[in-house]
Image (cartoon, rainbow, N blue to C red; front, side):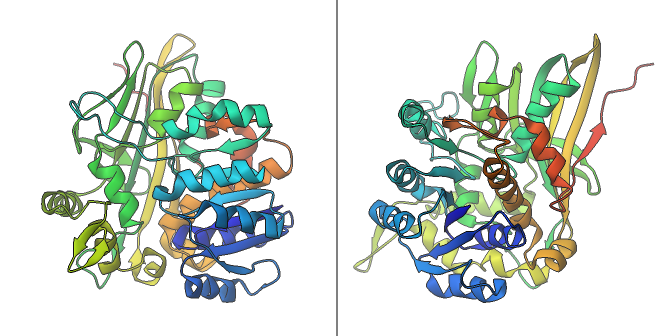
Amino acid sequence: MKVLLVGVGGVGEAIAAIAKERAWVEQIVLADYNVERAEEVAVKLGDPKRFPVEFIDASKQEMIEALAQKYGVDLIMNAVDPVFNKQIFDAAYNAGVTYMDMAMTLSEPHPEKPFELPGIKLGDYQFEKAKAWEEKGLLAVVGIGVEPGMADIFARYAQDHLFDEIDEVGVRDGANIEIAGYEFAPNFSIWTTIEECLNPPVIWEEGKGWFTTAPFSEPEIFDFPEIGPVEVVNVEHEEVLLVPRWVKTKRATFKYGLGDQFIGVLKTLHMLGLDNKEKINVKGVQVAPRDVVAACLPDPAHLGDNMSGKTCAGTWVKGTKDGQPREVYLYQVADNAACMKRWGCQAVVAQTAFSAVIAMDLLKNGQWQGVGVLGPEAFPPDPFMERMADYDFPYGIKEMTPKTA
């Protein structure tokens, strides 16, 4: 398989590092606006023929199409901030190749009732074009990271094997990651983090459909395997937009463990207008405040040596089996020390990246097939989960059914 990797940040590097040892990977083109960064990753990989470097401006669709044609790629992997999703998605369609991303096209809050009704939802742009992709016989796999991605596959697995009826699919993410030497240093793209944490969270309920609530709403304590209790809150995320399309459930939610300090920083950025992604005039220079925030913070791709701890991502499913109530948490725990030793990449980006590589593997080997715009839960989950341990990201299943007297 030949892949055009658009974006060689932390997750992009992890995708390349995890894929490197797989024989089915013929070539991955490391394309980034920051060529020095792409070259840094290429040196680490040490195989310039399989991992050539190219400059790319992801805002220019024609440049993406030209590189896809130049290298004769089979798949375009979108590993940049989702502000560029439309151009990359449309470029793959025009180039006639498979498309994959880890975050769908961006949402826009409802203009009048942002904390009650969705406006433009995550992925709406892509799903509106699904028929055109089907008619052209092309496949776009959207939301194939860890969350969304692995978490969605867990939901499908629960439906297929663990439950007769599902009441709720609740994705829960928590960590005990610490970063030495910084008062504040996000371990993932701050651009994306601001987007998903400050937008109105979406919830899905049977008979009601999608609706929104206030950011950081409905806090609860969730006991994560290998980490312990963490407070989690509602955050806008793709799983809630994807899971109900393919998994029969009465409710779908996403909650994330952010912590008081992180929430406080995000609220302050919003209060000051520093979360704005639209450019403003600063002494004759056009600049987006959010880009300034990102430039002031350390690059998550280079924080691995300062990080310690674990991150847990998973799917809490409640329902019934054989007429009895059941609750399970399907999860994956990534340890930063292990990820740094194995891949040279910190845990959060490595855990995000591995699902995309497994998906490429399954597509290449024909175990996943389809046309149109599909989420991860549209595919059979067993081949993916069987490969997780082989890729050094084994899953676990924790029984959480309350004990009866």
